[in-house]
Each structure stands twice: as structure tokens, then as C-alpha cells.
Length: 92
Image (cartoon, rainbow, N blue to C red; front, side, top):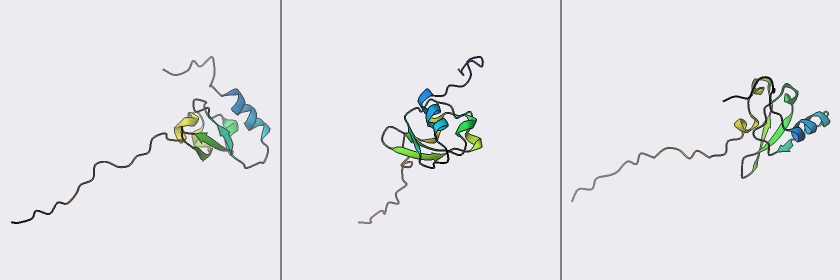
């Protein structure tokens, strides 16, 4: 279920303050707030999002507005489906 429209989007207070304070600096802002939504003020900034193991650098574009921050830092690594192994049948 989505958040009520009268409440507005959820933006983490600390993340909002860090974005507002950063001016022209291209260093990524570290954040653990994966549930925060991307606001239009975030566009053009670099975020370093924690995925549970390490920080992943993400450059915010206009297409990301309205999505959650955590969507852009996957927490699971895909190692592929089962491999098809070619078996050689030995004749005896």
C-alpha cells in the first residue's frame, strides 16, 4: 500500500539536510536511509547508498524522482542460473 497523499513523500530528515547543505561539491553523500523517496532536489547529486555490505555510488537523474533510494542499490548478487554442463559419455 502506498503512502497517503496528504502526508506527502517520505524524505529522511538527515538526508534532506545533507542535500540542502551541499553546494557544488561532487563528493557522494553517504546514507543508510533506503526507504527515503528521491525528491526533485536530489537530482544532480551523488549518493552513496548502503546495501547491507558496502556503499554503492549512485548519480541521481530525473527519471529516479518518486522512487525509493534503496531501489538503486541492490542487496543481492545474482550469480546466474544453473549451468548446463556438457557431459561426455565414455564408451567401455
